[in-house]
Image 1: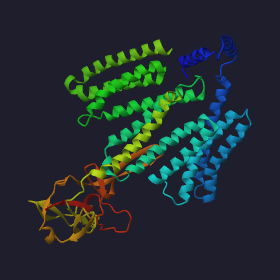
Image 2: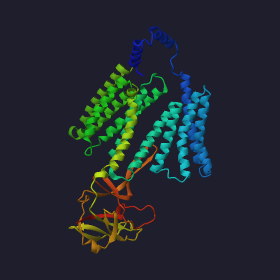
Image 3: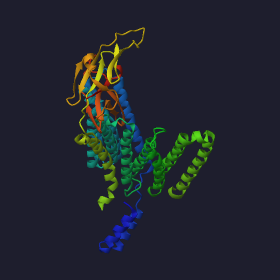
Image 4: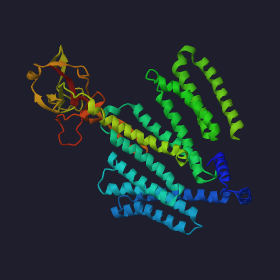
Length: 329
Length: 180
């Protein structure tokens, strides 16, 4: 929620005589006396340790299965993977009901999100299905997406939203492959680049949506920063790649790219997002190097090209530093 | 008010959906108004990767030339039996014809047929998790043109029934379009 929006709401409610000045002042004073909801340092550290523990458990199960693959029977393989995933999920629910073990429950949901896809793959493989085929990849990713999105809608835990985004992306890729399989209409690499570009654009919009949450310290805000960071990195990388290379270049994308980068750099100010500033500056540098090598290396010569590039890169570096100092700090 | 607040969320979810709809529409919609292929074509199939001879078009007529063995001389393999087929694109089926019968046909060996189609390999989109790539799939051939594709039911000789038959390389050779 944006500050202006809250103030507007207060104005509307005050004009309707629904709120009094005293009520607003009392609420303000109560709020200013309470501690901010930033998790204490020790809590954040324990959360990080929980997640690291989750990754270690996941790796342990993979190694255990890999070492004893030939000696394990089918039932044990399914039990170790899919069974562990479901057990971790159920443990998470039970811990959450304990109240004070809420953060530990997130770690178990995390383990479940890592192991369950492996478990589903192994179960389908044992069932005799071709897990590498587009049909089965679509089915697996679709099942996982529905399960984790449903869990998010029911439990409202960010960890489920993160896995929903991952499994949703996987479903989008697999289903796209299923649709185009065989059809030589889509044999151009640029078509795949556009498919990927859609993923990054979607991340940018989702990241922006999640950034508009009331508290800057909650997990949703952190997720939004990650989505914006990954989204802008992928978006600029893909659009740079779409420009291609002479003589097979796309002039449209090569001309559009600097405009996109400048747009991203300026968006970093209202969004107060350093990823936009850092990746925007780095990609602008990469673009200058690419265009120089592609078009000016033969006419100007490498030495002069390097000198000009050096000055331009210094200029971009200073500009990024200036924006960071003026608007971000 | 809630609607405007959720616009980025709606757009973020709509873009991938729109892409899927676009891909589906690109595959199926042009089939509604694209012209049907009419020009039949000749192709040859070899039973091995080292055919004994090849067929080609010279002065709009089929011709043949003997091919030397080009494989590893230390491990010679038998030269392949090569046969000619006439494919009817309307019925999407073909029949084997003799060299003498093929000589009576007027041929055009350009890649694109007079009615705007070409024979191309299929594509294979493969993915694991978030990693994916497309590659050419020589286990099937398609007639491509006017933004449509049609899978061709061609003959298979050689490793019939092995399950991994391929039209790759010397096994399949397009000879030419049959001009009326």
